[in-house]
Length: 140
Image 1 (tube, rainbow, N blue to C red):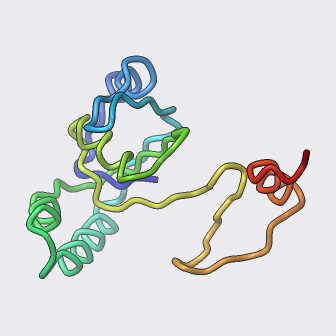
Image 2 (image 1 turned 120 degrees about the horizontal axis):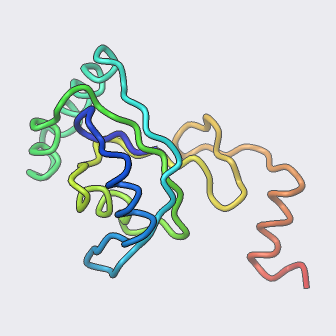
């Protein structure tokens, strides 16, 4: 789920960009499946902005610029990508005029991350173990 600046998202236009045309970034053209768009409450948006401004202090100018120019209310955009590395989701949404304030990975392949804290791990079910073993070539 990506939390982006502004409460106004043109669903039709964003769907076309992400799913049909693809979004051009420095690494090429990427597509994504748009799953859901939800406006964040003004109260929650203000709390997120406050946290983002505090976190951006002393960091790169780009992060401070994004945090200080945040338009409220914020919007949560859920999308699915085949491969999400090297800040690709952030770049894709920024190139669609939706700068990302927060980004939370919900799954990795079939592994659902649920509410795991950053840096923590939890037990896998049988289907998740099978998926990982297939990925590693252990089920041949």
